[in-house]
Structure formats: structure tokens, C-alpha cells
Image (cartoon, rainbow, N blue to C red; front, side):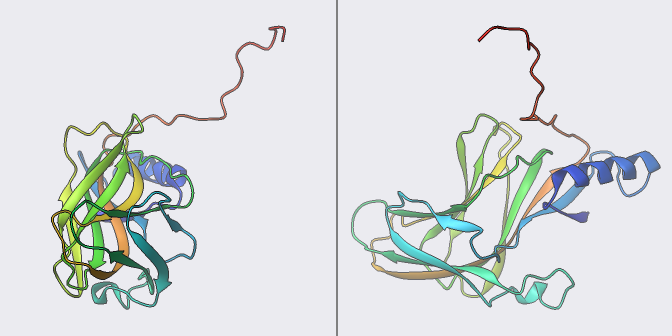
Length: 214
């Protein structure tokens, strides 16, 4: 299993095809780990405007010890604080990308994220948009652990791909106690099957009929 970056899908696709043609690195049904985001850039993410819980976020100098000291290690992570009011009802707070994301051009098999839970009793979900643009939520467990942990879960086979990463959702389902939650989010990865790719849809297609009168 190899790590490849999400920064420029076009170049990565060419690189993967070249390796395949040379008979190196790739095998049938090859799985590679793709870094979607290290969650460490100012302004990369924002609060969803209609979140029903109050919160705030900031890039902070925290990182998973398991990633420290490596050449591509993220030295910072995204800190998220949410003020849960407690009581009856369902509240959520969403962290979403500030700009449009590219669809992941390979079938996604598994999603992973490093999270420092701070021993919260609340929940986290990773968000995706499917091929139809419908929002999908990949639920993990309660954030009832302290310190860094890598959470992972397989992508449901029923989800229509390609998928687009769409952020995180925190919620307080069945948690009535009020209080402040503090978590840190670091490296987001997906395992993809590079043996199967999706055809890209170019928004810059050339007009077919230039003789029409208007």
C-alpha cells in the first residue's frame, strides 16, 4: 500500500498510469492511501452557516505523535470547540471545506481520520457527496477517548461513486449533558482502488454548434 497526495488529481492519474504501463508499483485491484487533507491550513475549512450548535475553530499547534518527525508530518491540526446546550433535542455542528472540492477519481474503499477526542460524549461523522450530489454521512463512534486515535470505516457499497469529501459533522444525539467539547482533527485519508478509475467531466467543453442565431 502506498501513499499518494490529493493535491493534484490530474498529475496523480498520469503518474499512476505510467507506473502501470511500466509494470511497477501497481498490481491488479491495487489499493493506495490518498491524503485528502492534513486539516492544518488557515481558511481551508469553515463553519456550516446553519449549524444548530454554537462553535468555533482555529488551526492549532497539535499533531498526532505517530505522525511527528516524518517528512510530510502535519505540524498543526484543526481545533474545534462546540458549546452543547444539553437537554432534549438534536444539535449539530458542521465543519465544511471553504472551496469546492474535486471528486475522488477512484472508488473509495475506506475513510480514515486522526482525531484527538478530549474524552467527549458526542459523535463525529465524516461527510461526502455522492455522484448525485447527495450528502452521505459516515458515522464513527462516540468521541469518548482522550488523546489521538486514528478512526477508520469502510465505505458502504450502496453509495454511488465517485465521492467528494465534504467535511465533518459533530452531533449530540442522546447526550443531554451541557458542556464544551474540544477536539482536534488531523490527517484525513481514503483508501482507493486505483485499478478502477472514473471518467472525468471537463467543465470546459467546446461548443458544438456555433451557427445558431441568438
